[in-house]
Structures are given as structure tokens and as C-alpha cells.
Amino acid sequence: YTGPVDDNGNSVYPGKALGSETQWARYYIPYSGNNMGPSKLVGVAGDHMNYLFYEQDPGRTIPDVRDYQYQPRTDGVFPEFHWIDFDINDFYSGKGDLMKSITDAEDPNLTQFLKDRGGKLIIYHGWSDTLIVAEDTLDYFNDMVNITFSGSIAAANENAQLFLAPGMGHCAGGPGPNAWDKLAPLVDWVENDVAPSSIIATHSSNGSVDNERPICAYPQQATYTGPTSGQNNPENWIAENFSCQ
Image 1 (cartoon, one colour):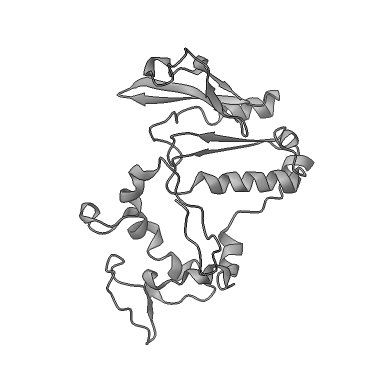
Image 2: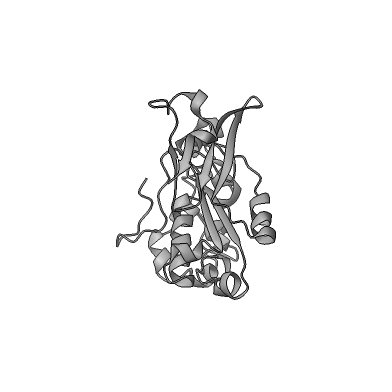
């Protein structure tokens, strides 16, 4: 849950969130059920360090990224590089700075869009997302508030809103309310100047809604205000029993 760090204790990426564990085996953990090839390894991560991190590619992908004992060829015209040999200390060494400048979208200065042009921005993220952790998005939003709006969350919320959905997975899914019209609140804000202070999200099982609550604009969060001691009763999981505080 703490995330990877280099030998100097520098954080490379936030750890996975509580509530995201159900997807770990599918995405990250090699076991017999996925033929020792979790989807993120065989899908996108197996050759990331070969071609998308270093300014100079260290070598082509090995024949089978699931072969953890494979000894890559390091000579010849087409040397190989095994992802398992990646040195995490390279993250802050400068060796990946060129590629990060191309692929990373992390500039928090949105002055031209949000202030100069009066643009509107809605960001949402599920707290149970195990692929891209919500903490990183929250850090970016706070950086944007500090750089673009001199640290004023009230000023930022005139043009930008962040919605963090408990129990929601990667873009959708998960045990918490995760379904709502993603476009309508933005259209209403742009065309009618109605900022979305909250969004009503639902969760369904077998085609029927069984959980509903507001997703509140950060920094507020939904608080149960329904019948006393009834927060664990699914019959009370309706939007009217929650308020943004």
C-alpha cells in the first residue's frame, strides 16, 4: 500500500488503495490462473522499459515476458532487455527524462485554459482503481490549485471540479456507485453556468440499482445522514440519505 521507492527512499508511485485488492491478481500477480502472465505484464508493461522509458532503448523485448528466469542476449545487432532487470533507481537518475517529457501529462499550470479562456474541467477517479491510483490524481489536482489558482480551492472550483468515487474501479465498475452521465454535468456547466457540486451515482446488480449516493466535489465528501444506525442497511443506500460535507 505504500508504493515503490528507490534506494534513497524517493517515492516512485503511490501505493495501491484499500479496496482495490480484488483486481490485483488479474492485473499484477502471476499465478496459475493467469498462466503466470497477469494482464498488465503481457499487455502493456512487458515492453514498456524497452521502448518507452529510456532515451536510448536498452534492447528489444524478450520472447516471453512470463519467463522470469530468461537470460537476455546482450550482444549482437538486436540485444535483448528483460523487464525484470529494470533498476528502479533509474527513475530519478535522468535517464528517462526525455521520454517522460513526451509521455507524461502532469503540467499543473492550466492558466491559459481555465483562467484566460474561462474553460471548465471535470475530473473523476475511482478510489478502488488499481491501475491508476486516485491519490496521484488528487495530488495533481492540488498542484493545479496551487499553481493555477494560488492555492484557492474556492477559486479553482469556479472552473475545475474533482470527483472521487468510493468503491469505483478503473473508469467504471467496482462495488461502489460508479455509473452516471459523464457528459451532462459538463454541458450544463458550460452552457448554463451551473457548476456540479455533486453527481448522483448508482451501482446495479442484475439490472437493478442497489446503491445510490452523491459523489461530492472535492474537498467535500458524502456523509450518511439517513436513519440512525442505518448506514449498513442497503435499503438506506439512496441519495437522499447522504449529504456533501
